[in-house]
Image (cartoon, rainbow, N blue to C red; front, side):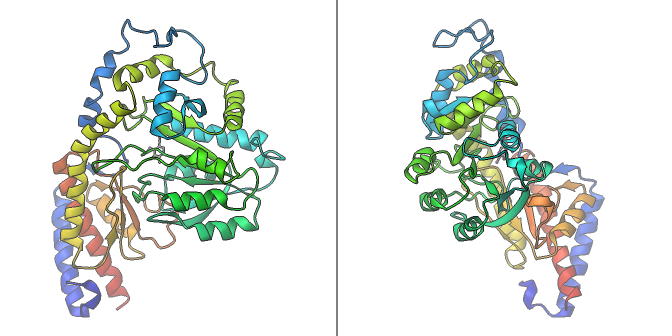
Length: 423
Ligand code: PMP
């Protein structure tokens, strides 16, 4: 029954029933974790053959002995593979180390210290800001927070960031130097930026050294038959007259081994030269043996897509299970809404305003770990205290069922509490 149309007495009875259910949950002594979007062990098993590669076969197709130093841009064949997956083309795409997040971090730091190719001064010469579509990825916000870059929330809509809000902010503020964005199956909503929104973002008036950090971490991570075709974002940027506006990131972290994959970085030639110049002070080159084993295992972009279909077979039922439980337990009460993503690693759950932190706390006390309240927002502050990020992939199906049922009980109980408070 809809909680909002209940009498105070009905609400009280419902709360008492939920309280009993919650006590039973606590008594079960659970220890479950829905916090981070990690692949499950069965997903990692899909890439097990890679552990014995490259073996004695350590020469790359173009004749590079991958045991030795060199090649800061990465193996050409892997650049080609990434260039196709991200629609950025071989020449504008680098194959790098194990973490795209590190590339993002380094680029922010290089820009603060030196400015980028279009900067008159280093970014750190004056206070600067980043636009942050919310809810978004906590580790993005962690980078900008660490370096004292002011973060401004803009709504993340089902078709991408609210372009009008971005336009209004950018128009008279040249201190806005960047924008975080997960364009495909965004973390945590699962939303994908449309061609139209992308073109409008690329055309906006902004500081010449304004950059969109186009983090295409989930470009191929589809839960349906086919992933959306990646936008040729670098070509679109050039067409819009801002060829240097976009930095494209991706990695194989959730394709092969999380934390032991290969990162990709793509951008205009000017931006790549700038990046390579700076990173060359820090490294003689990436781990080419890891790059080679990826190439031998995945072979090409089609190989990646076939591999992702195997991931999909494992994780799509887990997403469906979460959606079914949410629907079953929360549907009638009308106290929550949630996204139904076609890809990515998360479901974004919005509970009654003012109850997310309480729901997360109740779950924690019952042994169910959820991502900390506010995590998907800059400064860990959810202005409405309503968002909860659900990560279905890591637990087993049985654990997931128990944990989600528990989360639903906690959300319902918190809702009755605030509704009674305001009755
Ligand atoms: N970007 C997004 C949007 C992510 O969700 C993640 C992983 N959770 C990363 C980047 C991290 O990628 P990597 O392992 O390549 O650093």
